[in-house]
Image (cartoon, rainbow, N blue to C red; front, side, top):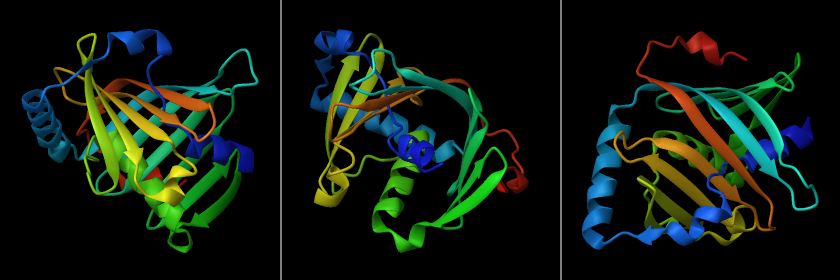
Amino acid sequence: MKTKLYIFLFFLNIFSISIFAQEQKMTAAEIASFKEDVNIVSKKIKTLSTDFIQYKHLDFLSKDIETSGKMIFKEPYLLQWQYKKPYNYSIVFKNGKILINDEGKKSAVDIGNSKIFGRINKLIVGSVSGNMFDDKEFTISYFKVKGQNLAKFIPKDATLKKYIKQIELTFDKEEATVVQVKLLESSDDYTRIVLKNKVINAKIDDSVFSN
């Protein structure tokens, strides 16, 4: 169970190295326009449900570990990640706690007892909604890639940086919503999550987050 949770917390990945050379830095005007579009859209998101495929890259493995499932978000801080393949495993962020259901075995972690857990929770919610352009928390750079927009976040907090070297969010250019999330760890390992079949602002009952 601890291994699964550890993998999840270092979950946020996107783009392959092959597209790196095609990245173009945004101009100041493009950055301002992009941020405004994302902020407008993120403020309108009350609920979000989406399928996801997660690819965990470990340097010592020749093939990435692939899992898939469904993510459900309800403002302000209700969030569920439900893994369905190759195992049943769900994580709910609710009322300052992380609720874990590992194939029927339930446990809980109090976020309030850990500053780092609190920051990770904030990052997860921000990455889902697209609302994380905080210059106090991150050094942020912006790029255009194949009709999409890419924002790279480097944590300024030394403690957080031990766990998360860089976060990369890829946005659909037209919808201004997150389509991929990438988290690079302090090592060369990373996680890549692809979001698809998004449904925004459908009615979601709080009971969904009971876990």
